Length: 138
Length: 375
Image (tube, rainbow over all chains, first blue to last red; front, top):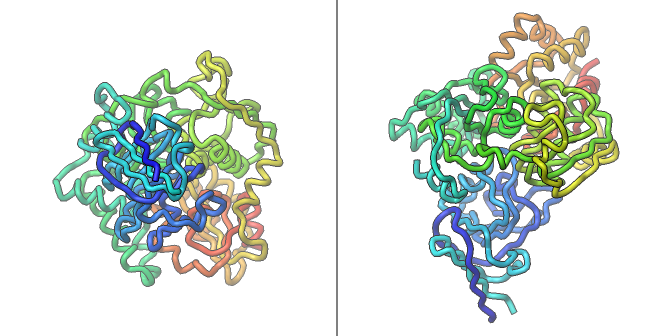
C-alpha cells in the first residue's frame, strides 16, 4: 500500500479518518438521508451513494444558509456524518457548520485533492497538525 | 465567540468589526435548535437587531401537528429560544424589505439564501454568506470577523453571464438563478443583457435560487445594481474567469430538470421566498372571481408585515374568497406540510420544489399555478 502525506490548511479543528468519497459536485448535507447517509439529491454525482462515516473530498458547500447545519446535525444524531472533509474552495456556511458539529475540515491541500485522492482510498485528516495522509487502495 | 474566531482564523481575518444588525435564517430544525439552545441556556441575548426566518404558524397549523410530533416540537422549542434571547420575531425570509433594512455601505451579518445576495448586490451593504449560527453569533456579539465580502477587493465580479433570454416574469428570474448557481457554483456573477431594472420580487427570486444550486454571496448587473456602473467596473479591471451564455433553451431545460410530474396536481404552494406586496397584488388580480377546484388545496406564504398591508389593500380578502389560504410565519420546509407527501403539487418556486415536503412536483409561473388550481 502506497502512503502519501500532504500539507494542508486547518479550517475546523480535529482528527478524522476513513474511506474516501470524492465528489466533483458541491454538497448540500440536507439532501442526504440522515438514516442511511445516502445522497438523495437528483442528478448529483454521489446520488445513491453513502457518505456515512467517510472522508469527503468535494469542491465546496452549497444551498441555504440554514439547512447545511441541520443536515450535518441530523447525520451526526444517526452516526452517519462524515468523519472529515477536504474542500478546495471553502465557503462560510459550510465552515460554520463544520466548526459547530466538530467535523474536521481542511483546504489548500498541497496537491489538487481530486488528483491526489480516489474514492476508496483510506484517508487520515489531522486538521490540528495540518496534515493529510492518503493510503492508496491497490 | 469561539465560533466566530474559528471562522476568522480560517479565513485569515485580521480583526473583528462591529455590525449593527443581523438576520438569522432560523429553520426550526435540529441544527438550528442545537445552537440557539446553547445561547439561551447560557443567558445570551441579542446585542443588535437580529431578525428571524420563517418557522411555522403554530396556531394555524395546530390541526396538522399530528404525524410528526418530534419535528413540530423541535420547531416549537427553537422558536421560543429565539424569543428568549431577544431576537425580532419577524419570521420572514424577506426581512430586508421591512423589519431589518441595512444601509448602503453598512457591515452586517445576514444569513438566508435570498438575503445575503440581496443586501450585498441590491442594497450595497456588506455581508458574508453567513450560516444561521454565524449570523446569530454576530447578532449576540455585535461583531463579525473581517474577511471575504467585507473587503472591497473581494466584491469584484468573477464570471460573466450573458443573458440572451427574455426575462418576462419572476419565474424566469428563478430559472436564471437556478441555472447560474449550478453552472458557476461559487464566485460573483456579472449579468449583462438585462435591459431594465428587475422588480423587487424578480431580484428576490434570482437571489434565492443562486443559493439553492450554488453558494453565491453577490452579483452585479452593471448600470443597475449599486456597486458597478459598467462591466469594467464590475470586474474591477480583472478579466472574467469564466463566461456563460443563458438563452431560452437553458431556462426551459432548467425548468424541466426539476419537474417530476406531468398530470393534474392537487396542491399549490406559492410564496417561497415569502411573497412581497407586489406579488400579493398580482395574485389577487389573477384569482379575482375564480374558485379553487374541489379536492385542491392552495396556499400562499407571506410575512406578517406584508399580510398586514395586503389586508389593508384588500388583496388578502380577494385571495381568500377564491378559496386559497394566506399563511404567515411559515417556511415550505416544515413539519406542517408532511401530510401532503402523497399528493402531486405545483409551485412557482424552484426552491420550494427543491426542498418540498409534498410528492411529485410541477413548476411554472404564478399564472400557470393559478390556471392549474382554479376555474
